[in-house]
Amino acid sequence: MAIETPSDAPVPSALPKLDEIRRRMASHTDRNDERRILEILAGSTALELDHLLLQLDLRALLGDVDDRLFGPDNRAALLDLLTAERLGDLGIPARAALAAALQRGRTGRRDEQALRRIFLGTRGEGLTRLKNTLDRRGGYHDLHQLFYRDIDDDALREELLEHIAREAVPTGEIKILSDIDDTFYANWKDTRYPAKTVYPGVLQFYAELDRGPGPTPGEPGDLIFVTARPGDRLGLVEDATIAALAARGQPAATILAGSFTRLLGNRAIAEKKLENFLEYRRLYPEYHFVFVGDSGQGDIHFGQRMLELAPEVVKAIFIHDVVATPHAARRELAVGGVRLFDTYVGAASDALELGLLDPEGAARVAAAALTAIDALVFPSDEGRRARRLDLDRDVARLNALLPAAAEPLVHTEARSSIKT
Image 1 (tube, rainbow, N blue to C red):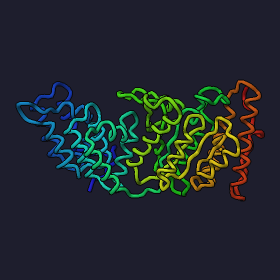
Image 2 (tube, rainbow, N blue to C red):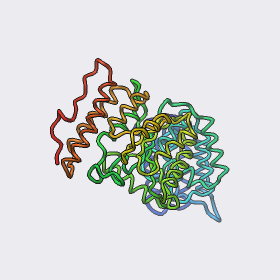
Image 3 (spheres, rainbow, N blue to C red):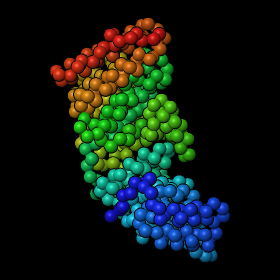
Image 4 (cartoon, rainbow, N blue to C red):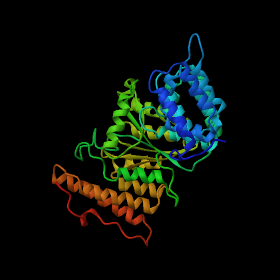
């Protein structure tokens, strides 16, 4: 059984060991230093070892301890110690830190086998926590990258995915997949808002879906952006996208990027997103999924394919309508499970009807949207009035859905004027 100690819990007996390891890593680490580091780690108690791994720069440690053509294979011995002999002494945060360190740089055969031992040695809810911890570290090196790019051995990948499927314990929670352009902010076909506008209420909508409808909030951090933007080998595009999202109020998101070969044509874009979804679903079989997209670039087709191929796990498809889809077509799409909306208050109303939000959560989305739209500077009075009408209509609909005892939401018409 893995120990579970808080990462910041003091372990006084580990401090001298931590100081010595860091001192030996500070300059050139020769075979004597490597042997001593191995001795320290091997002689540590479970609490000490767990604490040491959480405090050390594991990527640097794995780089400093070497295998030799003539001499001891100290790196192999280190990996065996941490991922075989003493894995049971490591809590989930330490296992995740070790897996993340193995993921950086070239992931060779011995590294892949060490990763295999970490994953196969972690079960049930602990495995769910391990996967989420890796995904929530931020940056390009996430779980999807690890399984589908860094691990080259197809048989090993399949073995690990089968282990994940066997050990899946349903969480009752959802992973939220979202597009970026014209879904998170106006950045492609949507000219109704000022360029780069983060849509009023979208951040709160994500947060409320992540929280869930029950009295006990779900585990936070289940937002994944599925974008047509092509990825690259160094992760520069994905890291830049994460930074741009954080600058606009959405930190710590996972990115599933597109492909240069699937960049032309809405159907090609949708099929690449579908490929990413099917891969990601295998990483998280214990979750349900929703998708939030827009009507401008293949997301309707993507949502329909999600429902077609995985109806048992896809709870909802929400599509931000940026091309004025006719009402008859919207009704037909809704029958098939694809709900189009004009504002995130409308999306919250749909989510309330589907049981994905509770009334309080839907009301918080509306309050956030009403506050956000007041701060926007529209280029024309006509555009301002049209967006106010959209929001007013959706607020009225949400008021009708809220319990009779709930206080009605204030319409935008009764609030301070939106700037122009």
